Length: 217
Length: 216
Image (cartoon, rainbow over all chains, first blue to last red; front, side):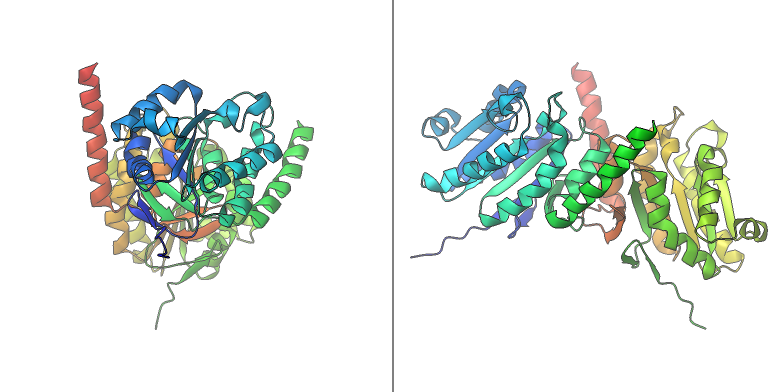
């Protein structure tokens, strides 16, 4: 049996073993320009694509996939492409419950190979964390914990952050919780990545400081 | 006699690239992370020029003293020099990037001229958030500084308060510094874009904006 090459190249870089990627964009136009070959190559190679999108941007997202040469309707009909709103993912039940979503997220990764696809290419728009809903403040804790899950699989996970919407502090935490990053359209291994054990400790250390600051006010 | 130009701090070792940006969430974090950068410089008899937020001047001096630096003495000998924004980035109540590039070189040269082996320049960059003419040239200025600094051994740290700057600007700042401090750790920056290329990108953005404006 031939061993199929699972190397993945896009955004001017080559993906190694680490496959939890955060991508910073200034616009939907930039997102699709940079990820075009990630989307297109995945369909051409018969990978499953699971996209978790801002419901307000769903139609535009599909239009841009079609613009990249993907037969969107056909891919959706046969299940190769699944485009879901946040409510079917992290915001199920109108709140982020990170335990529940972590389990579902892992099932999404498994769903591609279970259905006979070589792997799943997972993309999530992360602006759900800016919605005024309970639990969304656990975004960064969730992101660091994803690093316990993704290495178990070959699947590729891209978390897309709109720089015009997130605060710089959150963006820096997002940077530090992803081993691979796309900045300025270029994919790079991330020297600022902090492994989850250590980052969870840091999050715990921050909490008492915030609590006592809150008490002081 | 060989002069020691090696610089270690923030869990890293500074190489040939010495234009550093440092991202902090608070003044506490800034002084915790840069403490040894400040202290080692004084102990080695190097020059320190700090361009600070005028509102943080007293706090800054207090924290230098807490780090074990004899602030009063260092200021009277000229080893420590504190300069406000209005005499540096915002002379004439505006930001002139050419004048500022010249000034930075002047600061570095004057340290060497006064016999210091190295100048450690630290600049608080929040002046760029004030409503003054020219401040929107911040990123262009930062990338052009990469033509200037490789001529010197001096270490230049631009500090950015993450609670004040917008994320898109912070990403541009990150891409214009070959060395970065994030989460208290100093690293060579793989996202660094050399100035020729970054200036082209800035020009492309400007023309995109113009054509978008014409289209509307």
